[in-house]
Image (cartoon, rainbow, N blue to C red; front, side):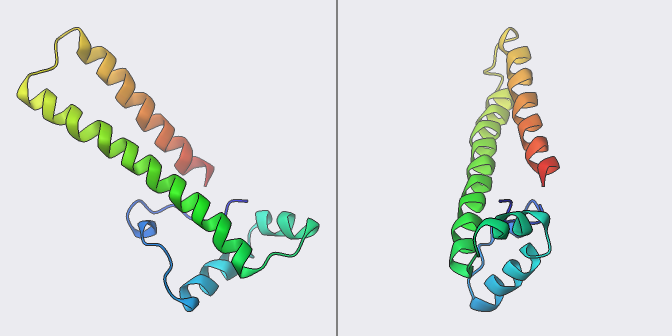
Length: 109
């Protein structure tokens, strides 16, 4: 289930660290249809929620890392003039695809 109920580019990079933060996230999740669907088959504990939350959080961090690892060197190489004219359109396409993938992740939340 979709455990992270909102999408904030910077704010949701912080993983919940206190019991209070976890309970707040879990209570927010309980208001969404995914929770109702998940609990129609089996009760969900806070421990279960922490697992699916971690999986989604790690996925988001992986996506952001992928974007940064691609974009920072690409921008550096562009500024230095080390990217050939023939490679620029391909770089633009890859940048667009990466951005579109990020957009879809945002849209799905």
